[in-house]
Length: 420
Ligand SMILES: [Zn+2]
Ligand SMILES: [Zn+2]
Image 1 (cartoon, helix red, strand yellow):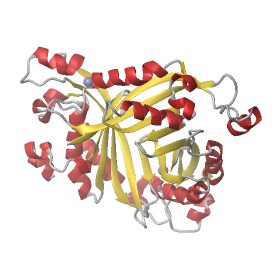
Image 2 (cartoon, rainbow, N blue to C red):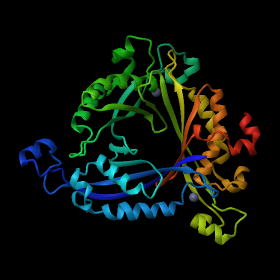
Image 3 (cartoon, rainbow, N blue to C red):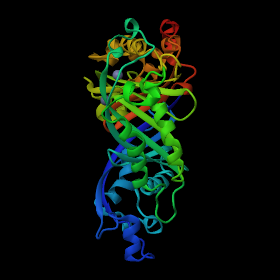
Image 4 (cartoon, rainbow, N blue to C red):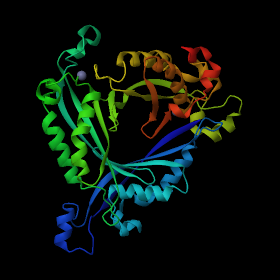
């Protein structure tokens, strides 16, 4: 059973974009204001993603070991450093955020089963490196009104058929080759300009149904799905002119609902986020207290402890040409409420959920359980469960892709759940 775990770390460091082979004027022209002496700094936030089979203790890796490796190999060296000089890799290629992520990958890969290194320069700009591919994401915001019309009935779609508005968040991700000397995959200024010109000028403070001709002159409903697809169409060509590929548009209607569109016809990923508060204890009842302490540390304390868990459920669907939706949102929320929130919120997982009297409720095992209990009901809605992400704390989260767990322990122990 394959699972991805994510571990967060942070460091503060400074850098300067300056190539000695270029003169002052050329450096300023190319990199200003990042060329300024003596440099500038960021509070970098790093997410290291690793993948593997769940072991007999319900974990991919022991997190305190992971924490140690990240500290000794990366953050203890980079924190409060001047990046250009701290690692020799940054003399060959400037320490852009893209390049820092790539070098961190190379340094950690011998020690950890990496699948992704994600590095935030700040909350509106980050990079992801997955071993070969580098991507860069810029986040922006706009406020707009819409209503789910023209071809949807108020009886079925309720309040959403009235004109109302959202603060949308848009994430545009591009993918490309890194320049071996500058460490850049794209001219960031030009990318921001394209998002501003193609999207924000058009959408910000508009009524999408009335003001955007694509929607006002057609029967296309401005659902989050259709808006994201249209934005992808608008961005694709201008971004390709920069020498990179638009790989994804992610559009948030709120913190609880977003879609990801990768430019593949009507295929879309639709996510909802919710949460529950629960206590748990990490201990295998068949082992001694000492042994449990060795494996699970403080998490094995006998009376348990608790978390505010955040849960993201992502389904894969097709955008319906009439409704503009990819999944029945009300139905999806009901499934999550019924199978997850209702039994788990304000519970002591080890005692209140029969499944966890036998299985240690690590974040990984909880995510597997949730994946299994929501999968069949979501299929009955006509959608396909893609991923469950469970965030146990800001530092730790895990992700289960439904395709990775064909045969499930939950199905074996509770066949009635699988049959629902
Ligand atoms: Zn709305
Ligand atoms: Zn815990």
